[in-house]
Image (cartoon, one colour):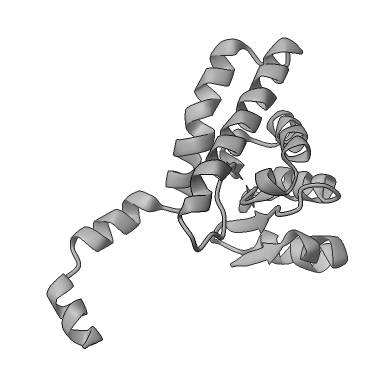
Length: 161
């Protein structure tokens, strides 16, 4: 289930209660990344099943996305953040978006190290977690890979005809 950040802003009591009752992870989308920092961080901190998806916030406002990520890292457990993604249909846009996101993530982590909030070792460990580990865990990619590997593709193709 996906509940938008705008939904949390407009109806925070109802949405957060729903989030607290869900057994599956709740993905809270942060697309604009400016006025929604506090409610998203609060729900991410208070509810075990609330997860942040920054999706295309990097291309909307990379400075706000970087600032938000810094605050999110020091506020909410780091396993609750999908730092990159998008709703692109053309694949060509993904490369530029990934470069902007990687630069922003690197800047956020470098600033946290420089400001002595995290160590360089912690920052380096966060890189793999934020860009690789979290998406694999949150989106249950290993589970899905096993399902796809064991799928009878011939029957799928026949059913499509």
